Amino acid sequence: MGALFSLLFPWGLIIQAVAIVHFIRRRPDTYWLWIILLGGGLGALVYVAAEILPDAGLLRHSFKVFPRRRRMRELEAIILDNPAPGNYEELADLYLEEGKYQRARDCYDKAISTRMDSPDAFYRRGLAEIELGDFAAASGDLSRVVAKDPGYDFHRAAGLLAHAYAKTGQSEKASALFAKTTQISTLSETYLNYAIFLASQGDRAGAREWTERVLAKKPTLPGYLRRRERVWFRKAKGLLKQLPAS
Image (cartoon, rainbow, N blue to C red; front, side, top):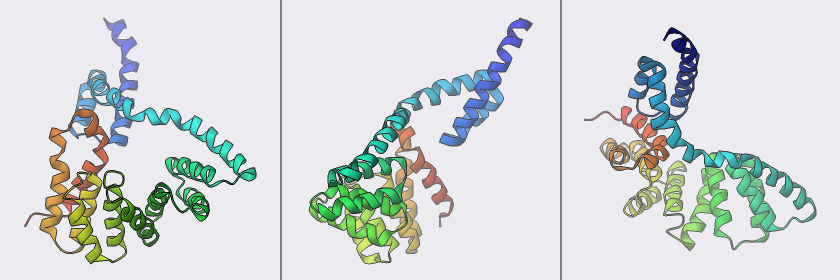
């Protein structure tokens, strides 16, 4: 028995270490940390089965990193001889997925300069501009998209346009568009941006209401969706702490 314990002991520590790293990165419910720490290797193993293995489905895009980067190198070479709008747009999409927002924006600029009929390019350039903090430019691109298709990307474009209006001091436009979009959209991102806007306008009660709507989703969502929404739940909890009840 002692020999078996000695054999399993280092593996228990390794599993605990893996579980703690995953916990720090993914931030599931706090009680899992106590299970990992107090339960030792067995507690960590339970955590792996309950949280890490289901998360593997959300990490499938990680396995596409190397093919994506290979395709980026190919396109970077191709556009030297063939600077077609389609090549620039595809390269921009890949840069956007990689989080290289300035490069993505530059490529969208080139794609759009010769082809003005693609709402997809304007929308994704708007996403890059939001990530870069250029909300004025983003509002221009997103307003073009929403004018053509108000429900674009499950109304996310409209929600982000309202957010861009809020960030550029266009409070009346932001208020009207948020009010309209939240009647038909259930995106946590839109709800949370609306809550942040209301808080900035001094409406703490309204901000709390929309923040709590994000958190109210958690008990009813299936596990895979809870994991996907985890970032919004974490942000909502942080915002709620800044909005004490009256």
